[in-house]
Image (cartoon, rainbow, N blue to C red; front, side, top):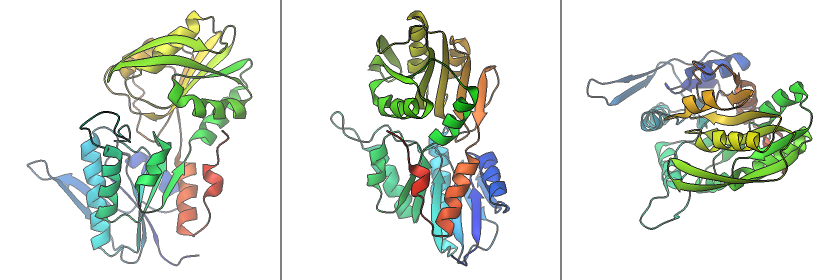
Length: 315
């Protein structure tokens, strides 16, 4: 057990989530100014004494990605220069995760670069949820606690008692995640054969598995432009699915995503609040809280307890 005080500080990416975490922990969010100079440069100041404290900086690197990432780096630097005993970057959504390897010539490995920036800024630890690629944990030379949102989502769908369930992966890359949900919800597994034509266009082919007369749950780690998952929903309906639901952890929702989700033939769109979600125009939207999960992880880090129970997920 540590005698250090616990401080929750937030940037502008997800202050409501930070407040929710603070309430779960029965503490007040530590005040910090995160503003802009007239030329657009970011100006931060922590408005409390954090010397010797256990500081948790809550900031998703969601759109606007560069602004939110820079805010996080400056907050880390400010806490380090204020002599915080330990700084944990709580990044519910870790952006710049798509480029985790060199898949063609003359491209960066951006996920590694961002990891280096966080470490060099002064972070001692990273706490995140549903990384786009699990191997990103290995890019850090500091501890990374990789949590899964599956307990939050599974609880929601168990309460609905969906019969004849098939969990569908919208592409091969998300098949392992879909298998875990199928196991925990007692459903079957199917996979959509998808080919990416460009950064913003995909082609959906066949469904590997049975969806006819089944209640389908399409699951992924994030929804960006919503092209893949909404086309997969239409394909499942065309193959005779009785109903379709869409679920994802991170609501990036850029470009035409909102229009695509609103027009998709689905009964419900379920997202978590790792990124703030504007419900406007999304009548079938359900947003689930991640604060209890993150708060428990933060308390376990603060009190030097094991987090293993929090990142167990059935494969």
